[in-house]
Length: 138
Length: 138
DNA sequence: CTTGAATCTCTAGTCACTAGAGACATTACA
DNA sequence: TGTAATGTCTCTAGTGACTAGAGATTCAAG
Ligand SMILES: [Zn+2]
Ligand SMILES: [Zn+2]
Ligand SMILES: [Zn+2]
Ligand SMILES: [Zn+2]
Image (cartoon, rainbow over all chains, first blue to last red):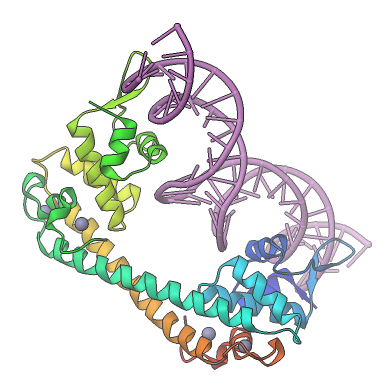
């Protein structure tokens, strides 16, 4: 049996975050000591590791909730799981695409001025004021 | 003189967002009609366009606040402006890097199952449960 | 002058936490 | 067994950048 602090150390999830996950229904309500403190077993540790890993991969709490439901019913179809993973992948790809466009503009903008001049002549400020200086939409 | 709705149309910034920017101090308090409605002039339009553009490029409200301060003082050094732009660029690059790593893992994970099996055998769920299946840290 | 659209202020909700207060429980050591 | 340090409890509020909605007022067109 682990205290919430021990669980926190083992999973690198902060203590208030563990309580938050419980409140959100990602973790079942923990058993309590006679003094009302949470105690966890191996299953609790594994579930929290699952959540942590999925969060690290960018899944939302809601998505993780659905994934956990599936995990708890090993005989159900896993179609929903692959759907969730695929749409998460698509989201990540869309974000990368957008950020790459931003990177290009920002790199042009920040190269345009060495910071030794005066605001009135600054290419950075001029670029922000006028989108026509940009190569593309954002 | 533009109403807030006209300003919204011209800048593609939603009406409540314009009011929010005013509250945050990005926009000066607008002039009012006798009936207490906001009215804007060309300067207001330009400032809001500046904010919109900077937001599109990912700058935070706080950063934009500093940039606007500089814009209002054309005789000051623009060093801070280039610093802000450069650090924004670095942030974007860091995000891209992280997302590319995520993309690799997610693409492996979602390729690993066609969704036609059962949760108990699902590679997606197994991958989320066990980070050892991953190629790298996230 | 009436009608309908626009605008006003204010509060609360979003997401995934994080911070802090004040009270209570557990653990280690003398 | 006593005590001190650390851990844990619940609760509230704050983060960033908005978004949604209620209920009241104002504006513009016909
Ligand atoms: Zn400059
Ligand atoms: Zn642009
Ligand atoms: Zn599967
Ligand atoms: Zn992993």
